[in-house]
Figure 1 (cartoon, rainbow, N blue to C red):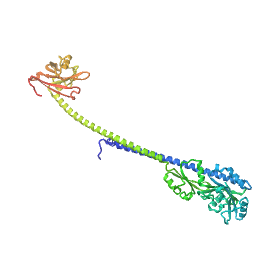
Figure 2: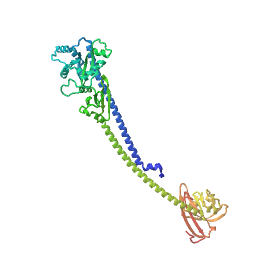
Figure 3: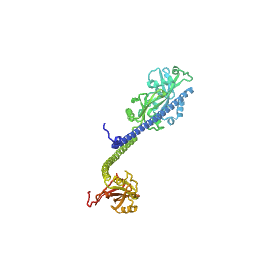
Length: 515
């Protein structure tokens, strides 16, 4: 496997812009997902709370209606005979229109046998209703008839004298109420009051009325003791609309009779009254809907609630802004880091080029220094590097040999030890004159004195003192030509902090010995 020398750092530098863009896009998507999840949870919490409130409100209102009927049953149980006027006064005191809006009627249906039918009709006709007759007509074993009904006006007049035991749906609820003694709801029906205008789904609630002082400890005893039923009739749209007056809801809902909420015929109420059979599509399209069963009054209802379609529009707009802004930021970050990466690559290339040039220069300088060092180390003249205060800093092998000192023994020695006749003042005078030279006698390590020519190269100014190179030529050992040849070379290897100049002098010759 081929790998780059820079490893992971090289990879990150090379692809930093893409990595940053990827990270930014990932953060944007995570933020959008988080907003989406928060929106979903908030919507679900809103739906749950509103659904619970609506179900509670419906149940409370229906229980209040049950109490109305329990009071009416108590009226019959407390009186030997309840007259039409008594019933009217009782219902008037309930103030239904004010306290319980949505009730279509509160009535009483008397139960009697076929043998009692003639006397029943005669009694009601004697109360001021000469045209009274039981409906629907026909021979039956047991009858019932609505004889008391309030308010006894308008639509309600159509229900007067109706035998509810003759209609199977109503009869089933009445029989359940008789058997259990509980308030019981019918399935969805069309009320007798639907004589004109819009026909609404309807239902009824029954509470049985038993014979006074009857024993009611079992179903058979209750069936024998029942003398009639008090009931409330409801037009479903009117009832729920009135209930919603007392409560504001921010959800859509549909109320179905029974457990099958996919049958349009079972619909009691829909908040979107125009939807009809399209209601299931509405809540499924919403994405947030809830189905719950209301099992009060021995008849199940199904309440389906959902959020309006425009509930998430504001959040969708926020998501769109978030994604758009995040995309712009990702692109800007990509462009920025692309530019920085290119600048870094350019800087790296420049640095690499400078490094190569430096290494080449260093190599050339080292070679040159080595060459100069070789010349200095092999020249016959003694070459000394002397500080301005006369202290010898360095000496070449020829100096050590000519002066008779061991290797490196001259370092740190005062120049006056080798040149007793040369004072510090004379050194300063020689420094003042570039390329000055003087004749002086030099003293070797064994105290021997030999004639010599002393030359000063170009001085180098440093702080706090001054260095210079001193050349000593042993005239006694030369053939002597009187011509000087000068060699100047930077020599950081031999003398790191100064420019060393060496003069090779042939004291006996009168012509140039060579370059």
